[in-house]
Image (cartoon, rainbow, N blue to C red; front, side, top):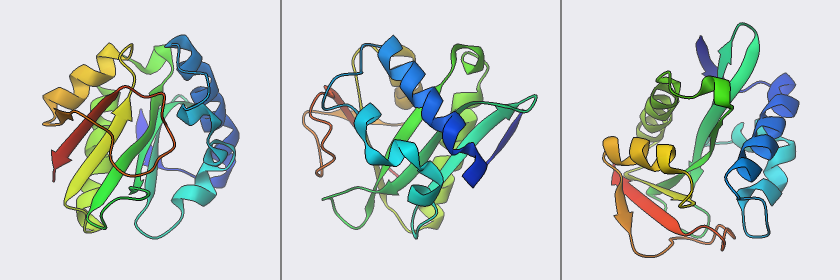
Length: 158
């Protein structure tokens, strides 16, 4: 298994993962990240200043990934953990932990002091991972992500 930064040729695979995983958890309607324009060109989105996206590749197949970027409409010192999804074959192996570690390390190196994320209450495994890594639930959303259907919010001091 390899964790690396996203490349242009990964766009189709990462987009397919997002479009496969989100409906699995009932997160496919309006107000969810599945409808974000960036899903079609993740490389271009995360190949910007203060952004990073990492993919997890096993035997030549991308099985998941996650990234960080400035929180839209948020404070300059706050990033958002974004688009962190894994196919079923990439779960339960500690790879999400490793991708999360790379994201938080990159966020710190890019000068962020806080990391925010939004999720959905059906994503229990993800919520457990976030809490294990020091993310604390907060009562309401931050910034202006447009993900009005998300119902669970976390923040972590980096």
